[in-house]
Image (cartoon, rainbow over all chains, first blue to last red; front, side):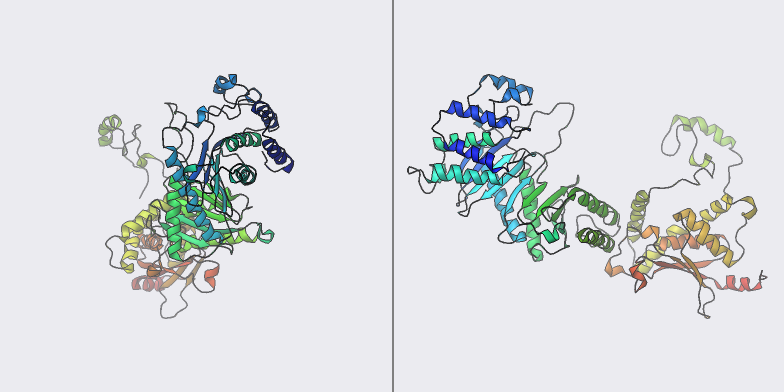
Length: 215
Length: 155
Length: 225
């Protein structure tokens, strides 16, 4: 699928910005949007690192056997086990999946991811020049997308391997969600030690909707 | 971002042995910064480590393997994209890694990589004077590799 | 001569049952070893070049152990090839049509046999050139050129050993053929793929065939035809 068309992005963001609408109708509209897509994309997780190399926000979405958007489940070719979650229609089915797999602790994972992007970023700058920055890498199992703001805040998203370039999406998340709901939030501190002030209700909800809408 | 004059260019090749040591590095076209040999060694080691880490970053539980078959081992980085170049990594079954740096829009990198691997198999591995895991200094390999990529880059 | 065994032998019959009971690398289960096959059967069969390359690579590595120098190494490769030449002379003559099954009787016939029949059998093509030394001091020297010796295809000789040419093995085969035909000679392989010719054929090799004195003397007595 393409992320490209500005019209669609625009509608996503305007949708997110109109957050005063009750959530249930939002989900409905997100479902409608997702019907436009022909192929299923999966976002696995999302991280934000601040300029002190600290992970200030992390979010894990779907497990493989349960696709992210349950609202459109019946309309999409998905694995059969998802019918179990088919009952929770119109309710964001994201809560349970946030529990981390026991394999590595969430903190360890975030540290490994930071180490990886940090090393790659340095390597890329060394080879490609100081203005080069890496966009994404792909393994056989997943794809990691990277976007760094001029203020050295790093946005990282892990998706399935088929997903095309998500840098625009990460940029949108920064501009329309992070800046709007975290930076402009008068109650949020300037720095975010331990993730303080990032995971507020508006940001999380908007992020959910945005990611769903994009897919 | 995209340099249209040089749209299909292979910039460089790096080969890393299974212990993370640099055994071959060569530039074929302008485009990447030149590093000194020490930096290349560090780069090879770093990439080796990052490659190992990326095999473990998959955020999902792998589905329990069917008892009859053994699942493919998770692969590390296969493709890395940046604004200025694209890096394709091919890891052989024996753990040698080939890193091919190309222009971002370069097509058919898989084919180029396959050909390079073939040349390596022929002119490095079949050479009785090549010592395994040591730096590649084979004149026949060098000649054919440079010849192949010169044709490719001038197309 | 290497032809079919005339007597499959009584002893063979006795051990036949034992062989069939213990099939293995040496004795296949049907009791037919490689020596039971007609000699012409494998005439047109080809061999994978990769498998030969690996084998030859190991032969070179093996010869390289405990050698004192490049000369010594080339000597060892030469010695590895020599018995092959002796046997090939028999085999290839046997495979010639009956009218021309005679062994070569003069130097030119021998060298032509080598550059065409032997080369075709080994490398599927004739040698690229055959010349007599133009130096009047060395009437006993002949040169066989191969632009791209098959045995050296995948070999890159390190700089510090640049005198080495692994085609010394082929030189050994040629030497074996000469010796077997009654023309004792020393054959050595030399890389000449330098200079302007090296652009086209960087692996070009000349096999220098130096016949022994008595061969040249004997040749002088033969009637010119």
